[in-house]
Image (cartoon, rainbow, N blue to C red; front, side):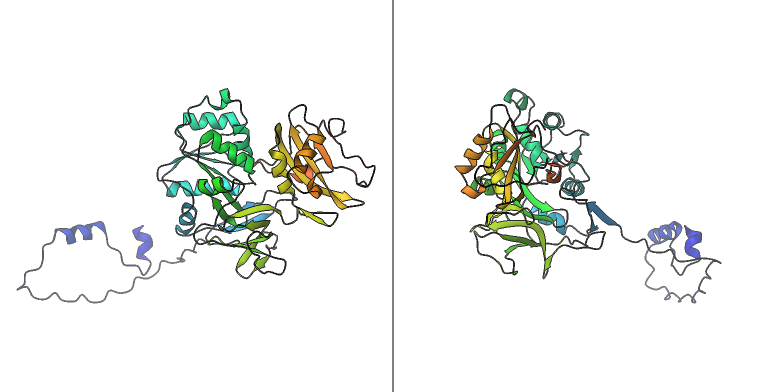
Length: 417
């Protein structure tokens, strides 16, 4: 090290010099003042020496889920300081020394964020190569995890396990469950509370926006389908098509600003912006208490016979029907209505299309009742649990006028998918 420094204009203090300073006593008061040493000649630079080039700061690129098309690379800067952690912790009850079971792939933004937060909290992290319902429960009990980080589909499957299997592991150590990555139905949130108690937090965010809102147990008791409220340092608003804020109770586009900037996609494109606010790509509504509820994707809106229908609203209704395991609702072209609703349902035996349609008819408007119901074994999903709607079996365009059939139950050609 010293030979390198000797050729540079850098003062060098060796260990021997420090030892002499430490052992030398104070100078006597009668001693003559020390003479200033003559200035030393500047050391010459070694031949061929060059100053080291500064190391550029890294950049994180996270792929979007690709549920509607080819995944995009989202550029994220490396964060400095603890501001981002403080924002999340203002709404999540994470504690120093927690033990986290992360039951989501680490390439997903939600799991990656929790993995990055763990060292700041001195938290242990438990991972499993396979994260099905029983594996997650067993790991929580075996490793004495206090926090479960999961996606809604995992929690849904855990709560649907037979009680003898679900209650077998000792999970008294679990004091908090945090869910994110895809929408959680109100019915699933209620089941999680019934099985685990008042420990659920629902985090709404995206690859581009990071966090947006967080629902704590009190929020979920008051409104089980809510995405919650923004943490500190985050501004959330719902705007109409003209960029004006809408009043509470009205649906609009969700815009957010926080301290975790998004640097655009790797292909040079960006998210729509309104001043410092950036669109999440979702539609939502704020209630009088400031809680946000997401009603669907901006591009998922179905206009059927001039009526606007939000597929997520229909999915939430169908998910409350006994026997339904999974459901996805989309709009497809229709010669008469412009678009018609199709419900893809994974359910137990005995359920018919008429059962599904009658259930929706009793809870939503007439135009929100699916014209077709397709029974499938399971919905196509990404590794993080999001439904890949473009992989759902397609149906032919047809007329929804008089005489058009609407029962696509067990006799439908796609029912065995």
